[in-house]
Image (tube, rainbow, N blue to C red; front, side):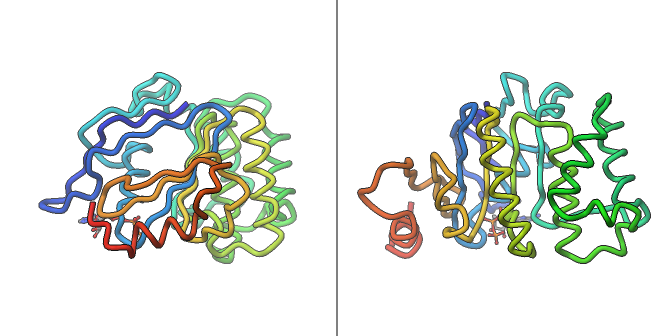
Length: 232
Ligand code: ATP
């Protein structure tokens, strides 16, 4: 379970996250929507402890900066960051060793197969295309079987097979009881997968929608909040 309480992050005078609070329970998928500059990546970087912030973030009850929390967290960043001089397979080995995972090779191979990277396991990071780097970044984030997984714009650059596989991964992780947060601009791409949708604007969570609440469509709500003169 992911718990974010009263998180505020300022860059100088800019309040990029303004007293943000939300929870994602086990087996729940949340999407985070908002226009450019709304504060989505800032919130995500606070959760992954890449940024200092005011407030409290817990992962399964562990403070997000703790080793226990980091073991439970998986993160697919907006821009894939692969090591130029490690091969695809060495990336997986590096992750398994970093998390001290025993006997994780079979799952690592399975992930690479699913994302059509197994036949490229001896290619160096710098030899991969942008989409292949994104797929490797996803495999690296999942290989330690995290319980809370954050995807920042995960579909960008992926081919249709990889998008389909990633959607299967979302469902599988959810069925296994993980808490999933997906930040995206592609509302259509996640329409079937979320339990809760949060809409950010100017650093604040301005609206939320629960799956099954059909009073307003997600896209309609998004435009109402972001273009409807709601200045919250
Ligand atoms: P996008 O959809 O464009 O990726 P976002 O919702 O992820 O946007 P953030 O990147 O979190 O938005 O940015 C929120 C605000 O914080 C913006 O006003 C942005 O200019 C500002 N900001 C982000 N990073 C920094 C930084 N390193 N220094 C100063 N201001 C920053």
